[in-house]
Every structure is written in C-alpha cells, then in structure tokens.
Length: 253
Ligand code: NDP
Image (cartoon, rainbow, N blue to C red; front, side, top):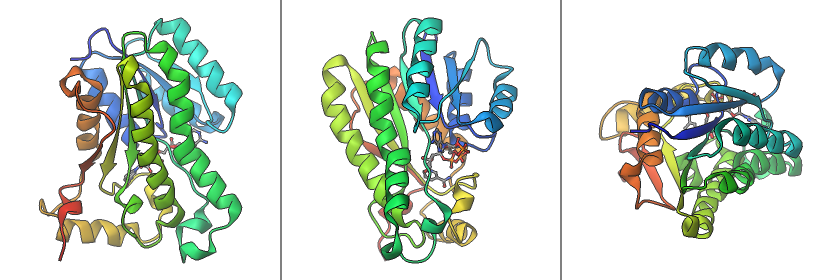
C-alpha cells in the first residue's frame, strides 16, 4: 500500500510509543521511513528499534530548536528526494501542570505545552510541504480532553484543542498542494507520556467499563488508522479528527 512512499515519523521514544505502532504499520506496507528523536538519551533507543527496518534514516530533532528542525528536513530531503507523509506524535507539558486544578497553570507551563504539543505541527508542516512534491498526508495525535474536561489533563487539553484547530487551518492552506492534514483522537494508552497524567490507571479502567467496545484501544489500532490516513485509501479526507477510542466519545449517560 505504501510502496515507493517516504514518511517521516516524530515521537518514537520506545516500543510502546504510538509513533512506533504507526511506524510498524507503515513499514509493513513498504514505506521507507525517517525517524527523529529528542536528545541524545533517546538516540540509542530509536537506532536499536529501527535497525531491522530497510534503509531507515534517524535524525535528532527537538522541536524547540529551529536549527535542529531545519537540519532534520535537509537530511531527509537529501536522503529521500521527496516526502509523502509525516506523522506528528509528540507532546509535552511540565508534570506539575498535569495534576490539580487547571486554574493554577503557570505562564511557563502554558507556553511550553502549547509550543511543543500544538505549534510544532504547524512548524513541521511548513518544513515538510516543500518536500511533498507529489502531494502528501500529515497526521497528528490528539485526545478527547481537547473538547471535554478530563481531570488532570488540564493544559494539555487546551493544547490539544489548539492542535485540532491547527489541523483544520493547515488542511485549508495545504489542500491546493494536495497535502492532507488530519488528527487521530486516540483513547488512553499506557505509554511513557501517559504516565505523566495522574490517575492514568483509573482512566483506563473507566474507559474499559463505559466504552461501547468495553475495552481500551491498542497502540496498533491507532497505527492502523494512521496507515489508512497516510495511504491513498483516505484521499478525500482532510481537516478531520478521527476517533480511535473504542467508541467512548459517543456516549452520553
Ligand atoms: P511517548 O512518550 O511514547 O511519545 C511522546 C513523544 O514526544 C516522545 O518521543 C517525546 O520525546 C516527544 N517529545 C516531547 N517533547 C519533545 C520535543 N521538544 N521535541 C521533539 N519531541 C518531543 O507517548 P505517546 O506515544 O503516548 O504520545 C504520542 C502522542 O499521542 C502525543 O501527542 C500524545 O499526547 C498523544 N496521545 C496519547 C494518548 C495516550 O493515552 N498515550 C492518547 C491520545 C493522544 P521525550 O521522551 O524525549 O520527551
């Protein structure tokens, strides 16, 4: 499905990362992939994980460092010649902002969360578009806390609301270049980042009890939806937020 397609994946920290589930799904369908990592401590992890993939490219990229972003895209442009898809699977908020009341969010925490978790999508789309010479697909990861209040999710919910809105504005701007932009709103999954949200265990249990499918979503199910969104099967879908949450979001009382 993705033979002769090149993709760039942001946000692999380890094998539990949603980004890694996306990478596995895309690699199985023949995509050639480039991975970015944030900071030297993750370099070895990402290199080990990707060692078995055919001709994967691994480059450093902390999205708060514009020079690193520029260099990452230069390297990928040189190695691949063109880019067909980009998967943005990164987010961050200081730990103290992910517990207690949203009301106490500091200016610094707000700025950091919004910059890394929301602005970075626009930053990466701007850098990727010139490489998407035959059109392309950009996919990001969101969460239900963007539209409803989820205890402890706090400023990350506000960042995800900005992210989902960015998806719509970017889709409008990039449509004329046949570049599609979509978000996946994933149900909670036990990853490194998720552990930063207080009471994650209780949240997983609640979803398993209340969602129509009566279970939690698996990372691979999110990966498969990302595969659909970066493939030509979704060629008329852009600007959307697609729920992959075992149906939790449709439930009222
Ligand atoms: P992971 O911790 O595995 O992935 C998060 C990634 O973001 C890490 O690779 C992290 O690197 C990276 N990151 C953080 N700050 C930066 C930065 N400044 N520059 C570049 N990369 C950075 O967790 P998930 O796989 O769970 O998260 C992936 C995405 O999915 C996030 O957007 C998250 O909000 C979203 N999501 C997660 C859900 C869940 O329940 N797990 C549910 C719905 C959405 P590092 O480790 O170095 O910080």
